[in-house]
Image (cartoon, rainbow over all chains, first blue to last red; front, side):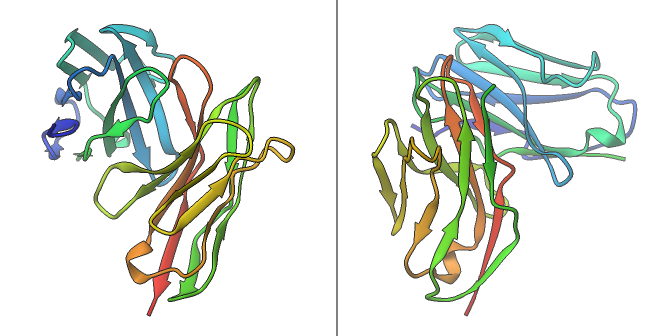
Length: 112
Length: 111
């Protein structure tokens, strides 16, 4: 298995633009997680899905952030409009029941 | 609630020194405990885990023992190498597959 795949690996955009981050979980995993990592706040859980259904989105910072999982092999995290304070590394992770989470390589987002 | 508290960093050690990174947890019930490692520019990857009290997780010379009586899961390595330089995260998983991560401890090993 190729592991968790994220794209793009790097994204530079201007304030106000829409940003879409993509994730392909490991086949057979029924949990998918989106995290944000910054120096100031560390690793933060934004949202997680079970069997494509959002279970807890309490970590999503505000309405500008949205996440979808249309099927078991694909998820998106969208920021619209983006702001400089959204600059961070965004990680996607997947797991099966009560097992370790497997992380993707992350997307480094820079909002100018 | 569930939470993890780990040692503040950064930690700087000389090669072949002994490493301890402290981790304590708060949880209702009996969580599984994990140590993850993040190398520069990469995602987190599992280093070791323990699923019940008194279990010892080990990998790549690292060890941690699940101590229920002290609610701790301290990471140790007898002789660190330059290649161990990374950020180490303690985490617990209690229910629903939701992980609670510590703030991370940065380790730098100098030759």
